[in-house]
Length: 223
Ligand SMILES: *Cc1c(COP(=O)(O)O)cnc(C)c1O
Image (cartoon, rainbow, N blue to C red; front, side, top):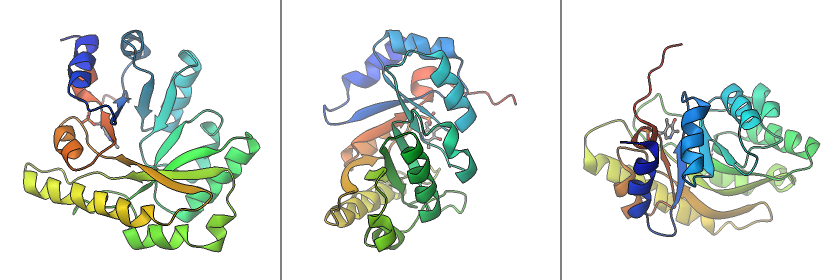
């Protein structure tokens, strides 16, 4: 199967309100260009150095999404171009994104990563953390970020009903937080679903799926 055909197959089953992020981490620019030439314009990476390098090399009409865990001291390397940061899981990080966005005279869209998985290894905040941040005075003063939704990762398991429960949890967190509409917080995006579980995620209300291996093939981590 070619990257082009993989993309076509996935897109043929996507409802119109669902955005596809092509997760290209570890893949060479040639592979990304194949997706680009097939019409794909949104790419997701999980390492700041890699997203910055690929941004330099590729056409400038691409939307770059940071989907991985973000280290505060590296925000500055992507703040000039990143379109959406999916993994915001604490206020200090949000403040740093705001600071760097201001330097670049931009407003950077962000998602709050909510912990829905039962594994300890997954990052994310509780719905209460998110709610407290949105309602705080410190948050209201951040003019160069905008919270546009929530993101979550289900537990790595074959248990479909567990995954379904976790997705439903994220959807209900989204609905709860959505009423806290402020200048810099207008929730419209639910980022959930990957290669193995995106059809279920869409059934549970996802509006943005992050798909890697089903488009680009399996990743080999050599380094
Ligand atoms: C790698 C990754 C994906 C894509 O995973 P696939 O199983 O290859 O589709 C989605 N979301 C995040 C946060 C990732 O790190």
